[in-house]
Length: 313
Ligand SMILES: [Fe+2]
Image 1 (spheres, rainbow, N blue to C red):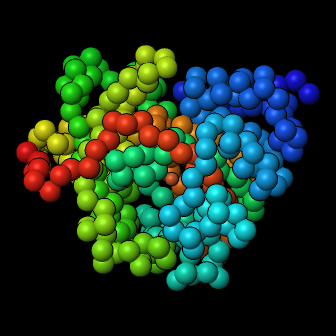
Image 2 (cartoon, rainbow, N blue to C red; image 1 turned 180 degrees about the vertical axis):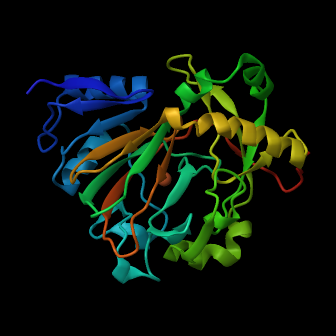
């Protein structure tokens, strides 16, 4: 089988085929995958891994893995795999939440975000693997923020060049300021967020990240804004910062830049968490969807915690 790499969708990602993930990958194949990852930021491996071991071994090609801080989220027997399944039977004790989104109940729904954006240190990436496909819905959306930056008009690029976004974790997505659907109601929160809600402000103080940065390996600019967790612009008063964030997010969430992956069982998608956003459309309340995720460690070293003496604006 020869390794084959081709475009996945307009503006987003590459699809890799001709690879057997149940066998150890040779040095040349690993290098080709790492180069493709740097080029595109999102790689799809269709129906390529039938075991947790293959999922873990592919993930290790792209860096060391980190364990999720909440032990209850670990997949049984695999501390480096996070179980992000939605099962109606687990209501009240699930790793994912149930929301009503524009009038429809959706288990496992997530707005556009990059992972751990509310921390100063952001993980390198992750690989999702589909284990049980739901009978309806369950797609994951991806946006490449290098492609998004390329759509910004020059005056807007110059305006954001030296600015920083302030982020803070909220206990549920109805409290987010940006990127929300028209109507959003929380029905049942993820178990970990329920237990953390009372101490969330204390344990997760605000952080700041630059609005744009240069990818060091390629010199390309990345639009570094996650709608979820954003609360304002560090250098601006609230109303001015919010207006600029709304404008920037309208470029990021341009439907022409998004790819929605419709999962088959054993598909894997790798994403670069430093240059892409993702979202989950969720599944109807009575559907089962089984998914697991690895977390690839790293730090792009551009984020910092806001000190208690700093105020915005
Ligand atoms: Fe995520």
